[in-house]
Image 1 (tube, chains in turn yellow, green):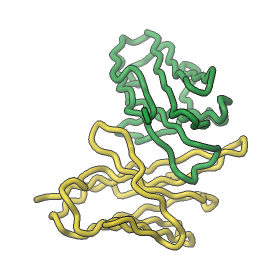
Image 2 (tube, one colour):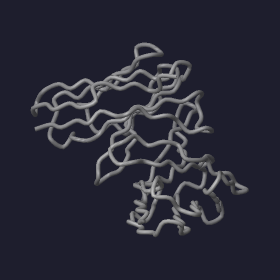
Image 3 (cartoon, chains in turn green, brown):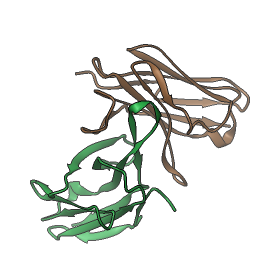
Image 4 (cartoon, chains in turn red, orange):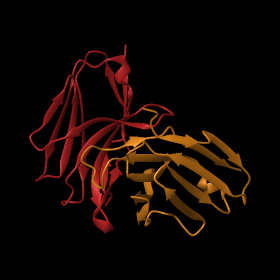
Length: 113
Length: 115
């Protein structure tokens, strides 16, 4: 089983619509969760952290369900500039008392005018 | 803030040649990561350092790959000898501290093509 699984899409969504992505993670010990955004031929950039109580940043809302090991991202009033690949990310505990991040393969979003 | 700086941006090399990728983390960040991204496998963690010490290199594909961090402001990833299957985008990232509470920042990547 992959550590972080996402629907690769693409999701084709009209401008102004609401779109939601989900991902599941396999390691129940994971403590930190993020959504990253990656534009074509660019580096991944942190979009937002995901907190247990859910959190919102403008048009973006992230939710975490620890019992189901499930993370979601909701984008309201989508803009053309939201077209990108959205990566679901969780931390992994490694040796040495530190951790690293495991990335899903991403969900490709295309906002259509 | 200069961000994470990687060089070169693009590298084309012949199979069997040695390739060295370079990374300068953000000043004050004490953890540094090397990732590889391909269409098939997505982003894979190769190795990471905390306070210049390698913490986890279990993602390094094989002995042809090696990474060093001689000081807090510089790291290298070396492939010797290179093979066509090593073609990918290699990203370096850095963060403050040993834990991922705040995520981390990526460099622009090195696009490696081995022919």
